[in-house]
Length: 356
Image 1 (spheres, rainbow, N blue to C red):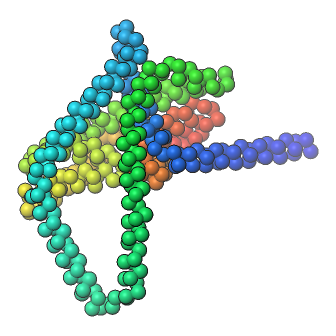
Image 2: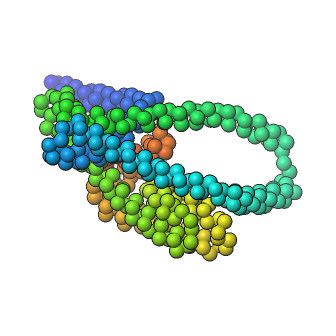
Image 3: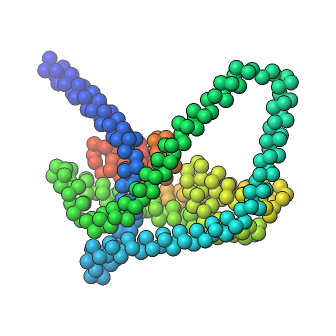
């Protein structure tokens, strides 16, 4: 009987631990959903701080005070982003001056498509009569959908602009208070778990840094190849288009569509035959496939070490929760979770589940 009681207690403890884990996971996901803007801003700041930390460490080794080194690095980051924004703004202004030609071409193409759709609809109605009740219901439903989603979109954009202003300050404080934050995080755990926490933090930093560097390298390779393609096809704004197409292609799943859309729009006033579009779209798709199957496993995959199922599920969950930003942050979040699991004996099985 005592042995049976021990088995029963162990089974009950395991069930209780599992239930507590499920509840905790649900609470965390709920917080992530309702506090999305705050958590996204914090995560972006953490990733930037991890990426910039080697520069701060290099300045510290040159006898700069850590706070001053962090300030210099953040100022350089903001300056670089400002210069890049001015460069892109000038290119957008050039594009805007040519916009009438693009709009006329696009309007003509849209009218042709609408004319064909209308012709197809009329031919279909000759075979299948239209139901007045159904048409009326669909027509009445459209305004409610627009009114339901218009204001939240504006609210989200305003919130994003507000939160972006916090990022430089968060990055500065994270870099200047790095040792204090790390020590506090480690000491918050029991003495037995502190080595695992310290190793987990180092693993997260190493994984995030490798992931960012790998994506930048792949993005630059795709940008150079895309810019060369646009030069061969005679497109304008080829450098800006190359950078946008190369880095947009890094976005999972939707990236290839975003990478193609801009060049196709720019090509409309200059290219009026089908073969160049086939070359343009086919080559960009080939670039994306090569990046996904060759460059990413070699350059990024070795640093993240996650299996495709875990990556896909992470993209699905965080994309559903946070939209486009979730697709960008999904892999870093999953990689950080794997780095934590790999450094705690009780969680290593989950790390193996996420790994290759």
